[in-house]
Image (tube, rainbow, N blue to C red; front, side):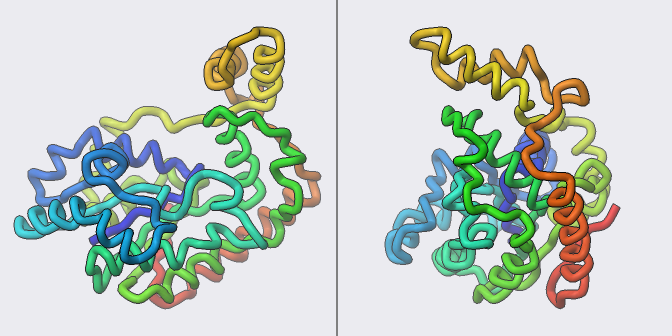
Length: 290
């Protein structure tokens, strides 16, 4: 059993679309992929912030489905970044921690599914860029928030992915954690296919079926969307963002918001590299390298 946790804003949607496009081909090789299209609908993955008893009750449809496909043998891959928490600041960033409620959430999931040696898979990202991208996601979700208000009290230099990984490693029923960096994702098709799907040859299917990764929102698009909403009565923010992104697509010409000073950006990159080196030394953790 492989449980792909995301994280948000680390090309999780791109990975999920790739897997969904090849679901039938994977099933022919006894690799059973269950992503957001199933887990958020007919299989009814609940909020993992609920009580353990409630999570166990609500996961009955998923448990029954897993029993069926487990009987066929092979490998099962679950993927939904909302298992870590919703893509909102309170869920993703608090008190210098990534996903502060991740460990109890995943423990409720593992206990409810009766897992004993699960592999967790997770992509990580430069903390400063993660914060900026998460802010942009609020706009895509229909909430245009000033970055200063969104990031008030957040210091990207405080956040360490290794801290989250160690909390997840301590969850009973977790056997191994597989990690990769978002920045390396485009060059990791082969090792990701090997670890998640059990066969490196599936890497070709990623490139064959995958759409382009989501590019996020440019700073110009955020500004233009706000102006559109102010000038157009009745225009919903989601529609304004779509129009703004078409006019100002994130690119070299229209870069993402860059709210942090050069010192903070440089320091964040350095700390992120050090954290990645440290993660490679942790027992029970496999770090995928290009």
